[in-house]
Length: 297
Image 1 (cartoon, one colour):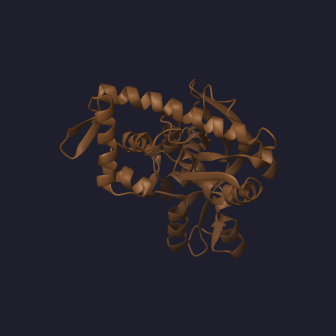
Image 2 (spheres, helix red, strand yellow):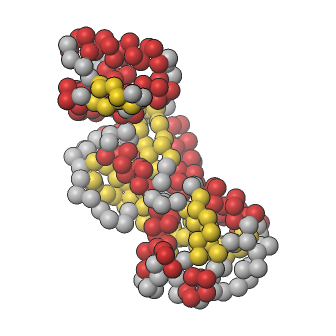
């Protein structure tokens, strides 16, 4: 088992911040500093280089971090594998899951609820960010399993298809756009509210528009908002057109708060994939969750 000091070091190294590590671990910053000092005394080398308010890993610190990441993964596998020897329902462990906004807010809640009812000893940590962030979190070992939209596949990541959805153009029912059908040319002249860069929803839109010869610079973008809920609430109050994942606005469409504004010839479909670091495909806990989620979808 990793010592408390090693777990604290991992948190500091992942965040490159003593204060952020303290927040993540729910301990005081002096306690974080004390644990790191214990390791530096134990190994007789500095693990962090202090540069004013920022810190970075020393060569020794980076070496220790690389070893501890591997040790942490082995520890997690041991806990899960031994707990499931007699019965998979006895599984225990810690599932670090990352998902893009649409999946995290509108698809996963019921799946996670059912999963935890069946596997009561598995602790789940869910990170909800855009697709770019989740991919980077996977590669930096902050999460062990991600669910994101995928445009370009990396050789260091393995992919398994999860589900598809549709992104549709919508506006407030009070907008002058309500009840209209637009051409691609009219779309480029229409005030738009869009997601932030790095968003899978935005990437899907731009990919679909590129097939019609339209670039981001051709669009009349009035505002960019971070997150699906922020964009949805803005569209409810404004007259702009926006592009929303259909699962995120089922209620608003049914109640007439938002209405679809068809754009001739524009169809936006997204595919979501489970992503894992290459070489971790045999991980029992993430494989178990993938199988459960596919059945429960």
